[in-house]
Image (cartoon, rainbow, N blue to C red; front, side, top):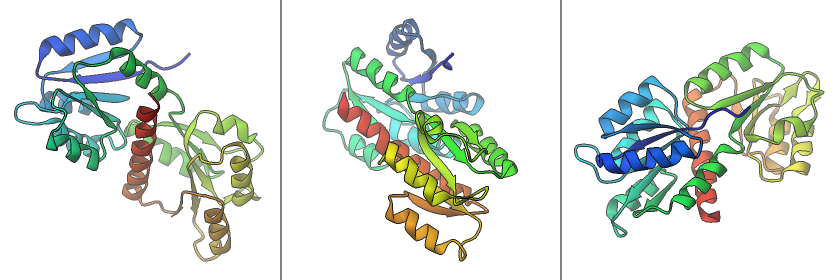
Length: 250
């Protein structure tokens, strides 16, 4: 059974949040309302959300500043803004700083619901590594920041089983005797564009393998022990590109 998709709606117009909450709840989503940026930050500090839908112009804290603050609490959390002002400097600033997109008021509800449906798909980070302690530690870190994580520690698992619902793959270059580059080649046969981050604890020894992986479209290579802020920034950037792609398809 699929997990419930959680949406946080932020707007100082209580009628707006109430109306949207009713519509989204009837469509099967779990909805929380916030009447200000400060209220939203408090709620995100207490629970995990899958998406934030925020008005761009609010007293005390606008939607762009809220997005900045949310990145510190839950990096990678998709934030989309609502506005009734088509030519607003805040819109440009928000897009430059990484919000997923901007919806014009009055809102196209079917458009929004379609976006949420797309957002629910392929929302898992897959860690492919035979080091179970590493997998567990990274799983805990990412889950606390709102990511969904799947661990693959068996090198004989079929590639299809962990690429179907993956948003990003973290792949060890030495996978229990199997060359990670060969696994990447198999992934590329199935999905040429799926972001794959190669991981290794052997920078010098694995230099040729790293170069080979980058030549077949590995997104990046990270070194153990991982720099978590760098990983989170990469994941946030990939999330932004993906979400903007979803919005363009609508």
